[in-house]
Image (cartoon, rainbow, N blue to C red; front, side, top):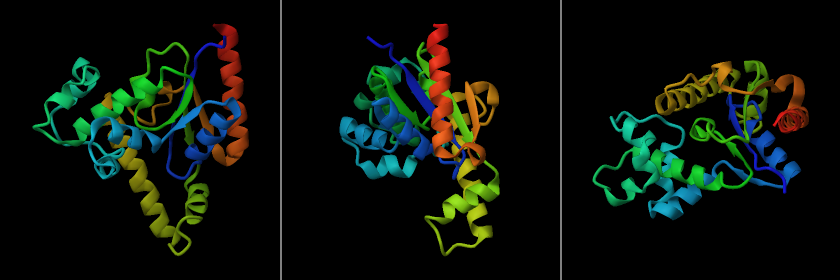
Length: 209
């Protein structure tokens, strides 16, 4: 029986992180989780999906960080005490879902999964990035009417939101290369090349184990 593995992908906006995650999951025949985690968290908690969407990868201003990352989150404390409705509470629910789906091999994009699953022996952590010009070209496919200036502003804002979210919930730096096993400039590799690099890393890791 093959050993369990988990690939997490953090990504700069417009660097093909989601596309790489989907293609990798298809190649490996495992489940892919991105926005699917929002649906699972909504179903598990009974909270409307819109709450999770509005809080998705956005940091909270509350003071519940220690509870979120502690044992209370994994024991369902937040389900029993719903007197405070916050992004931290939603994060705790989603964190519990991430730990559950990680009971099987899978690919997870974003949402601090690399940190939440850092003790998993089969974990492979990836960060995708690319020059701003390349990312503007990619994002333009979804926003053909926007100017380069507006697209650049949107990209930098999304990156800042993701960095703040990650930094807040992990106390680590989102773009710190030391957090990742593999950092990929997707302007060189494209989606297919990135998938091949991750597969090669997985092979090397399994040989070493």
